[in-house]
Amino acid sequence: MLLICPDCNNRYEVSKSNQNMDITCQCGRDLKVLPWMNHREVLSNESSSTCPMCGQQYDLSNLRAGTEIACHCGNLLTVKNPALEQISSGRRENDHATRLRETELQGLIDTSRLIHSAIHDLNRLLMLVVRITSDMLEAEGATIVLQDLKTGDLVFHSISGKESAKLKSFRIATGEGIAGSCVQTRQPVVVNDTQNDTRFSARADKKSGFKTRSILCVPLLIDDNCIGALEAVNKKQDRGFDEHDLLLAEAVASQIAVAIQNVQLTEEAIRTERLAAIGQAVTGIAHCIKNMLHGLKGGLFMVKTTLKKAAGEIDDRGYQVLERNQDRLTGLVQDMLTYSKDREPEYEPTDLNELVGSVVELMQTKAGERQITLAFQPDKAIDELLIDPRGIYRCVLNLVSNALDACEDEGSRVTVTSRPINGQSVQVDVADQGCGMNAETLATVFQPFVSSKGSQGTGLGLSITKKIITEHGGRMEVDSTEGRGSTFSIILPQKVA
Image (cartoon, rainbow, N blue to C red; front, side):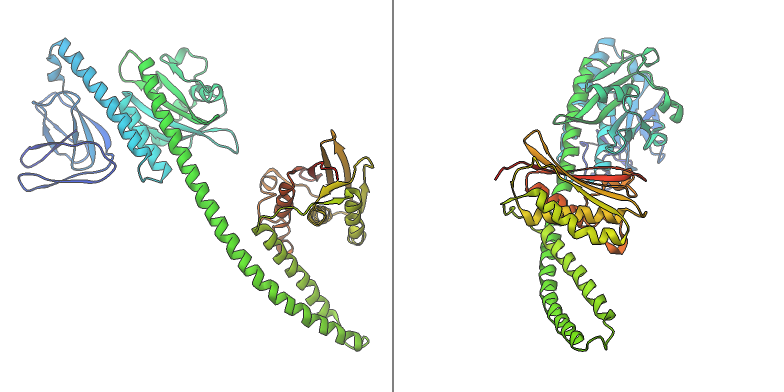
């Protein structure tokens, strides 16, 4: 593209870049090229034309149609001079074909540079890519639609062209419209007559006031997953989109998918490093607190001994509060240490039914205080297994305790069952008739430090339970309906002792 000095009309050939460029003209004026400038067209029937943004005038009499001018205000101007269209047809077609090939090649180069540049803002990166795509495909606009993982809807993420601002965050359902069909089938789609295509949805046009005549849409694929689509609308040439345009769009779409994957991998790496740092900090703090708790435990033992000697002359309610909170603090520290470090299960031959039964027996007192029925229904067909008894005991204890806490009504029931599955696994279910969970709570139920118990819970119980079961090579499942109760299931591989 050309950079023209407004003082002396000297011309400088410059390339598009995502960096600021400063050029000093021979006349001494400092000229600036802003990164990835907005696109505007200069239409002229006279010998001069004016930039619609800053009013700078340009002499177009000796410029070819299609020439790009980098205006000092930041606009990218395209010359479209009817006077120059009197050139012979053959030359015009050759020039157009040459310019088209140059535009396509430059567009692919620009896209590749952007994808591998230092830009980490995904929104800005994709916005720049759709602008390049519009120019390269000679389309009136382009859109990147991405799938919302929670709802499955397709969201208009990055849009270029007229009325594009009105469609920001616009949503279409899965399978709706040309883009929805493209994502659903994972196949590219070219439609040059949208009004006669049954897949076309006019909802976006109604919202924006834009009229879509033709669409080219290609899927964005990461490995075997389709995360969205790249869509170009309204080919400026009457011939419509063709196979050549489709190949170009697929090349750009593959680059976009790489960019999105790079951002996801970077975010995941940052998240992993942050969790590792938190884990190290938590481990250090927990060890310090653990040492303090040993001292506190010794002091409480001496207080308890003194209270016994006093034979009831001193009110021991304050001691009971201290002891209860010390146990709670000890449990929190132990949870933090368990969660922050990976460990191999210490396998021992264990009677699973006996282990689960001992948990149920221990929790009968808590159930009785709340007038909740706690029952265990073991399957005698389960053989002695190789498991880490301390780890599995803790998991079952967490689930039974949570089930009792979830039951707010007297007369509720908590049922614990065990059973073999196809001779390959064993399953322990803890079902309650408590408050249940909504979809939002269910989605975060195993996340650390997320608790529905307020100050009574640490938010680590279920996270640690899942971690221990995963270390055994097993898995956790949960089924819950708000207002009707929940069932948590532990599935362990059946390693026979």
